[in-house]
Length: 98
Image (cartoon, rainbow, N blue to C red; front, top):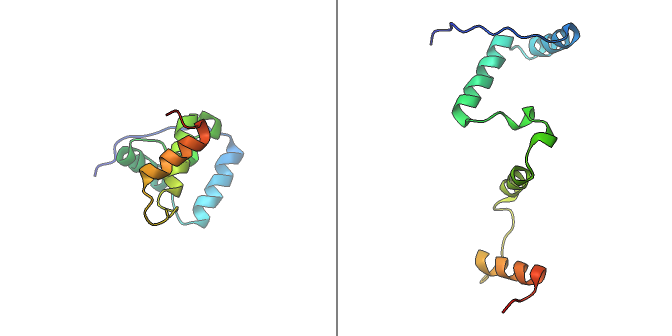
C-alpha cells in the first residue's frame, strides 16, 4: 500500500508531549495509531465508541449498546421462549389490553 496522504493536526504542545510519552511507552508511532484508526473506520464504517463523547450518542444507540452487551446472558426457564417473556413483560408494564 502506498502512503501518499499527509495529515496536519493542531493541538496543544503539552497534550502532544503527554501523548508522545504514552505512544513511546507502548512502542507505537503516531502514524501507526492514525493508520489503525482509519483502517477501523473504513472496516466498521463508524468512529470508535471510545472517541465519541457520551452526550453525543443518541439515546436509542445507548440502549442498543446496552442490549448488545447483555445479549445471551439471560437464560430463560425451560418451556419459556423469547416471545412469551416479552409478552409477560408487556403485560406487567402496560396491563393486559385484551
